[in-house]
Length: 355
Image 1 (cartoon, helix red, strand yellow):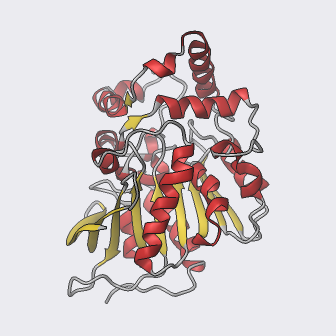
Image 2: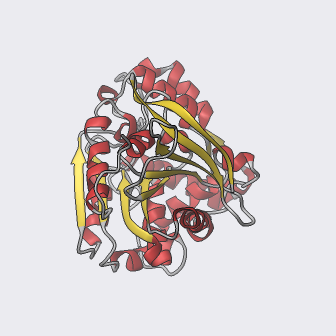
C-alpha cells in the first residue's frame, strides 16, 4: 500500500539539494512496516528511471533517519544517483512502531518476517526485480542472515560497520554484555525491563557532547569518531535517528557472541546464518568498515568478507567511526561513492539520472 506520494526538495549534503518523489509505503501482512521510497524527480515532477532497487536497513535502536538526516542524507544521494531507494523501519521503530508493529522478541523477527515482508512488497512494486540489501550495523548482520533465505530476491548485499562476530575487538562492549548476561541469569533482568529509550541517550550526548568527546569520558566507546563529524550533524543524528532499543534483542546478540563462543553454524534464525551465508557464491558482497569504529571494529567486520565464498566480493575500510560511516563529514566522499559505484557496476544498466 502506498499511503502518500509527493515531490519534495531535500538536502543531499547541506546546501547541495535536489528534488525527489517521496512515497510512504506500508507492507502487507499481520505486522505492518513502513518504508519511505525515494526516487529523483524529473523537471516535470515525475520519477526518473532507475538503475536498480535498494532496500536500506538501519541498525540497533535506530530508525529511518540513520540514512536520512535533514542536512546529510545517504538515501537522497543514492536516489539522485538513479536508484529506487526504499528506507525500511524495522518493527518497533519509527513509523512501523506507530503503526502497531511492536518491538521484537529477538533479532529472528527481523530475519524471518520483517525483511522478507519488505522485500515482497518492494518486488510487487518494482515488477519482481531483485533488490540490493544495504544494511548498517545490525542491519548488515540481518542482511547476511536474510540473503540465504530469500535467494534470487536479493541482487547483492552491502554491509556498513556490521559486526559479523559481534563484540570481536570491542572489549568494552563485551564487558557490558557479560555483566548484562550475569544479571539476567540471576534475576531474569531482561524480562522485567522495558525497551531502552535511546533517544534520551541521544539527548544526553547532545547536551554533554564536550564531555563525551573529552579525555575524561569514562566509557570505552562513543559510537562515533569526533574529528569526522560536525557538531550539528551529530546533534541531528542523536535527536532524530536514536529510537527504542530492545533489551531482548541486545540479550540475544550478547548470548550469541559469548555463550555460544561466536559460533555461526547454529541452525535457525540469526544465530545460524553463517554457514548458509558463507556458501552463497553467486550473491555479490560489499563490506565497509571504519578503522575508528569502537562498536564494530574492523577485526569483527572484515570476517564476513574473509569467510564468504562469493566469487564477487569487496572489502573497503577508511578512518571513520560507527555513526560517521554514514553521515560523517567525509561520508559523501568515501562511503557514499563506494556504495554507489559498487551498486552501479552490478545494476546491469548505466546511470538513469533525470534530465
